[in-house]
Length: 165
Image (tube, rainbow, N blue to C red):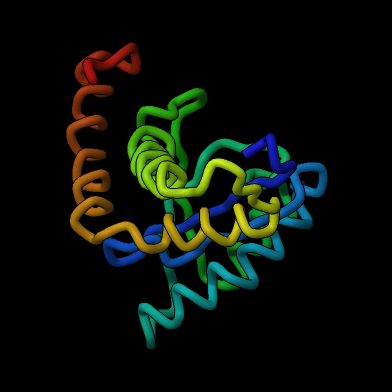
């Protein structure tokens, strides 16, 4: 969320947002992606899939981070294989097309209860955003993930063109 100068990297695992990681927007690069793969992501994957030696994850096409050579090497070193989204395809990223909306609705509902003079610090906002995202019900997250199948089928039918929402 640019207004806070932060880059969010998140992961949906077993029907919940299990990883919500902040990096300063100006610091998001291959080194930050390597730290994400070798840190919070692999730790969460290992915790949720004990005994697994390899993991398959869906990533976007961010060339400055996820697609950088160092990030690809880091993924391979910890057993992460990726399914990549086609270029410019936010309609296939569950966080982009669905879950951000759900988080936003819940954040606005919380804010409607704030006293008029309430001022939230950037740190408090980031903490509340993380808690809100990670607290999304599994039913909401699974619905978004399941909708990916319909979207992929629509994309194939449209021969990579626009799909009906």
